[in-house]
Image: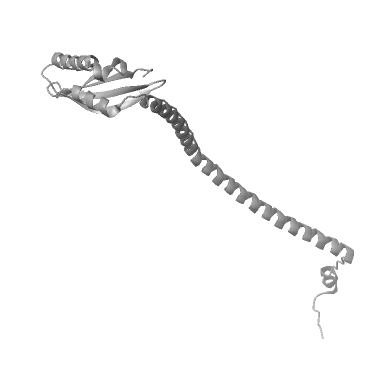
Length: 197
């Protein structure tokens, strides 16, 4: 048994009933379902876009890291082509009947004891040319040292057995290395091979 102690007016004011038809309830449910699906789809799409952006950022970083390697590879390929061309010129000139072991032994005998060789290399563009870098030890004065270098160059040009396969000698540079009291003169010259040996 229920006992209602509220006055009669209050009872009727608090009770308002609202009836929703089944059709309207279906529309509300469909609308809510649509927005839930749309929210899930947009969340998934946002996640995929974020992961694609991260993947693209990694690809861009990898590309930036490989760009110097690609430039280095291209530089090495260009250097290889230059060396291949030089090697072909050098091989052609080295096969011209010059016996290089005898030529280098003769050259060694022309070098005075005050001068020592630091490098012998082949240089060429259209023809191979013997390029020799030599260092001279300390002598009393620069005039004596220059006279010694001049005498050495004249000995090379004056030796007919050695110089017959060459057509000229060019002095490239002379540098003084060390202090005023102890110095070494470094000089470099090039001997040109005759093109029609």
